[in-house]
Amino acid sequence: MKTIGLLGGMSWESTVTYYKIVNETVKKELGGLHSAKVLLYSVDFSEIEKCQADGEWDKSAVILSTAARNLEKAGADFIVICTNTMHKVVPQIQNSINIPVIHIAEATADELKHYNITKVALLGTKYTMTQDFYKEKIVHAGITVLVPDEEEIEIVNDIIYNELCLGIISEASKEKLLNIIHGLAKQGAQGVILGCTEIGLLIQQKDMELPVFDTAQIHAVRAAELSIEV
Image (cartoon, rainbow, N blue to C red; front, side, top):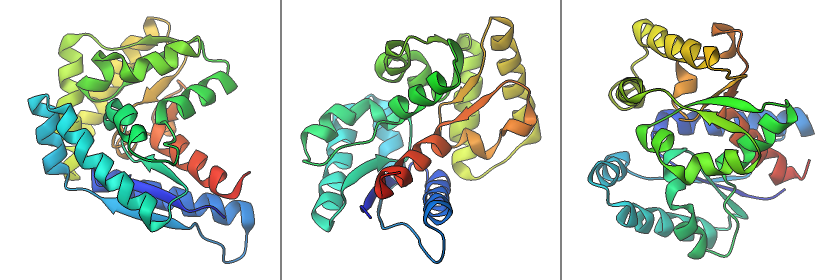
């Protein structure tokens, strides 16, 4: 079994989800008392969020690259960054280590292709929804990406940072997100990417008919499968 290097803490709530799913998947595949071999480096999200807000992506890349190197030194066979937004700095992180980074958007694109999705809605932080570092991986797979309008982007971003990252689960906010998704479905979306690892804390498949692609779930399962070479 390979050792998974989880780079988490962004936020810690979603990192818990990763740890849980990784171990559940390994147990399901191997049975008995098997659990995953995991190393976890959890950063201070306040430092990372400040870098995001100030546009200091290079500074955040240094912080996460240092963490990734420590995971490599500790024996990790590959790195899984437990957040969507910070995949913006994956190129810098990958250049600083000798083990692979398993990209969350590439894993998600593979899942979308498996279900023959050709047009998908994307919800996430404003960085994920408006910048190309994430969407380009989906588009490269031949899938059209739909995002909310500017006002709705701010609503989604506010719910993520001021509620979900603080552990606040609001039914009113769930309704706001569901209404936004409904609007994107009217534009032809065949599914919705929960492109922020916290959104899955608020919205699940049972909340809608449109197929839901929870990136934290997809990413964590991919990590577990790679660790046992399923």
